[in-house]
Amino acid sequence: MTSPTAHRHSGGARGSGGRTRQGGAGPVLLTALAPAVWGTFYVVTTELLPPGHPLFAGLLRALPAGLIALAITRTLPRGAWRAKAAVLGILNIGLPFPLLAVAAERLPGGVAATLAAAQPLVVALLAVVVLRERLSPWRLGWGLAGVAGVGLVVIGPAAALDSAGVVAGLGCAASMALGVTLTKRWGRPAGAGPTAFAGWQLTAGGVFLAPVVLLVEGRPPAVDAAAALGYLWLGLAGGLLAFVLWFRGVTTLPVSSAAVLVLLSPLVAAVLGAVVLDQVLGPVQLLGFALALASIVAGQRPERGRSGGREEAGRRTARVSGRR
Image (cartoon, rainbow, N blue to C red):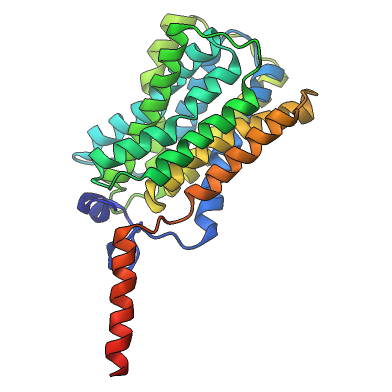
């Protein structure tokens, strides 16, 4: 269920009858490319980028991509959308990047990834408050299964917890979940395509990040050829392309279906770790991998609740009346 405001501003994200348009597997696969690309960040960061500057990497992932999108589209937010774009940019990009950096610094990578995987659970709860959707035990159950699956894949036996890291990791998941839910609530204004919409948020998130990077990390690191290649990948693929696809999907797909796709990010990271870094995926990790994939697939299936049953009963009644 989407709100009237989202329908009014979604810029083509509706189907007939005011329902969210899904259009088969195509939109899902395109949206899934975004978290799949984000899953490459661990390998890129460890193998190509200078250590100790995760916020600088986040800044280069956001601000240049946003400015490129604005230059391509030549479309700026107007009226109330100036404030909305700033809020969405901070929630989706500006806050999660530093929070994730803190979680990754103070926690084992697997624990940080598992906390971030809680995003679909938070979205399922926020959808009740923000989008006035019915609380879905189906979504909550598979969301828990997805978190458990990711945990089995990425948490090692020596994992330790740090309270500040846990708070940062959960804060990252909550910020992105609220950003995704508000993106669905507000939709996309008429006349703004996915590239412009992503450009507004990337620019706002980058502007928010810039002083944080300066205060926390100081001067930027020296950049060699390998680092330049890594930053280009983060900015063009992980920033511009991924966020255009992501925000297009969020405004097109049901919000819970889009949110559960973020589980692909740690799964792709685990696969690349096995292929590129010779990390081993044992039976427990493979079981978690299968469980997380099952959660993603289940999240794309429409829940046949009471409203769906009433609609089907109405269609059967109409067919019987037509025969008479």
